[in-house]
Image (cartoon, rainbow, N blue to C red; front, side, top):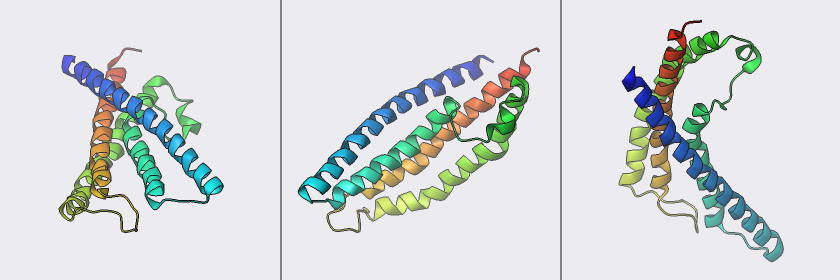
Length: 169
């Protein structure tokens, strides 16, 4: 039991830090998009690199916040039934859902993305657009990284659910 609690605390703290960093990326994205809109409409200038930077930031925010969102239980779920269930039933749903769906899906994405990311690094992939950003391979590397973080948080959710199920009613 001690290992389970240490694991849960470590992964929760790790994803709290990443969630905090991601929130700053969100603020940066707002500033970049605002600048882009102002420049586009006032000066009638536009930059492919700036537009790509916007979607790179959005991609990082989406990818890196997935584990944090699971940690704080704010992910998308059909709560019509779940919220009416007892904490014990919710723990069963989280336990089985994580083991049967979340963890296997994370493993599949991590494995499936390896060749995709590896090829991107080998060819030193950049934007195909003139004026686009270099080093697209770095962005692609965040796919397996983010799903690994989600996998770790999914395991923590399994452990939290297990501990909840062990509690006496």
